[in-house]
Amino acid sequence: MTANDSTAGQPEEFVRTYTLTGGRTRARHLLSLDTVLEPGSGRPGPGQPPECQEIVALCREHRRSVTELAGRLGRPVTAVKILISDLLDARGLTIPISGPYAASDQEADPRPSTQLLVAAMAGLRREFPDAVSYLQAG
Figure (cartoon, one colour):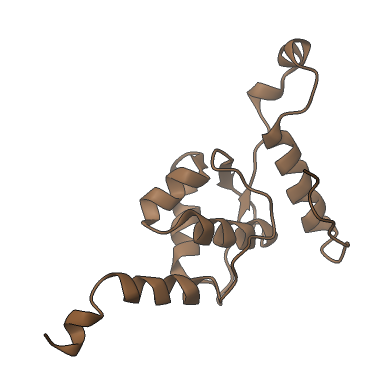
């Protein structure tokens, strides 16, 4: 057994994921697995990993969910959420609000959906980055 045999596969990926997120373990935005994303007016900065460019390119093809992006990249969902959060801050991605929020749907359930609340929160965080964050209830 050589030194390369003992580190083949998972350990390298683990270190790569850690470096991919800059050591962060939480995204700044609340994203569910089924949050849908589309490209925004901004773009990833020069200091962001190449996976950010790939995420934006995939979303340019058509809207993608967080889960689908993680699967396409072959990365853990938590790491992809952190990259998506960075892209939301850079306006490289947006969370679209479309058809499911039409007036006819509100008659069935007048409460806002989770995706609508996530989109509103992402917009507020982008506009007010220095605002104090409170822990989630429940």
